[in-house]
Length: 457
Ligand SMILES: [Zn+2]
Picture: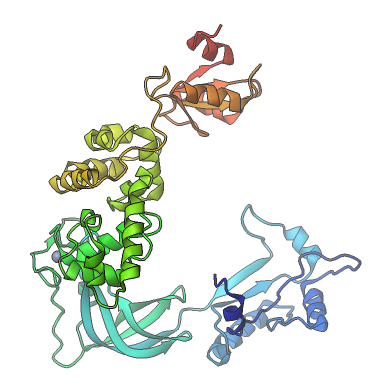
């Protein structure tokens, strides 16, 4: 991902070439022959050997496993392959995997270390997450000193106490995790999960059937900062220069209490913060100002509604003409949207029915943020709210001409048939989509019928 080639060059990257994919002017009949040829040409290859019985293969896997720690690069397994290409062709492959190769994964490296303390982080949605700090230990190539303890249940089930010696490992060789308690500390007392939010001091709630313990105080500063970080992020309002450090300061100083307050900031507010020059303060104000013109879906995503990602935010904005329509919609309206399930629909209704949300939207509106999609939904068309799927070859129109015609009349087109499809426009040689429409009982129409609906004939 590093785009500066000079920096990349300093990183002493290396490579192992493990296969010849294609070759001309020469025939290779086995994997070993290919690897030997690569070595001969001077390409670095990982070590390899050939065996003619499975016991020796198993021995080799064990040998490699034992020398893992001594290699100057990390490995997580060994691959066993059939050497002869002729045999490989005979064995063939499934839809996903060749039948002539198998990867053996070594169990992740495990190490004991001491749990020094447990800190509680408050996330954007108010969830309290316990994080363990350990005595640093070298694990699969990196030093590990922190790992998430997930939630209260995880700590209780494993009986984790501060001061304990715990076994940690790297899940998937990347994320460190606590496997178990190896030995309790002397006079170990079970960790008591806080009953109040460490950030705002409000009592926390524990929903039944949910592992998460949550701070539901909408004014909680920890949530506010994280909420602001999400609000200004690239896929959301994309406000350049508003990094986490500045947002934290703005919230600590009480200058910003909600995302709307960002739009009330003046250059002097920002230059009053530590190490912020006047010029950069002015630039920041301009980028905040510029974000008012953002597409509505950015704002909808920026609100940080539970279960609503960027793609869902875009789809919502394609289905409603203004933010008011979105706010007034009920769960059942959201559920009519293709791909939206009950969880998302309820999440949306809940969020938009909150007084805090109504206030925030009213604020943002009065501050001049764009509240309509730039391409408003076609309203009033004959096909408003109708979804079409086009399949097969139509007698006179191309499929794109047909979909244009549908969209001009307020309809939408989709590529897959579901219960939410209003019509399937079928032409000659229509295949599986037509069958699916018949199974689901979706109305099937011809090009002629489409034209009749629009009184074109
Ligand atoms: Zn709180």
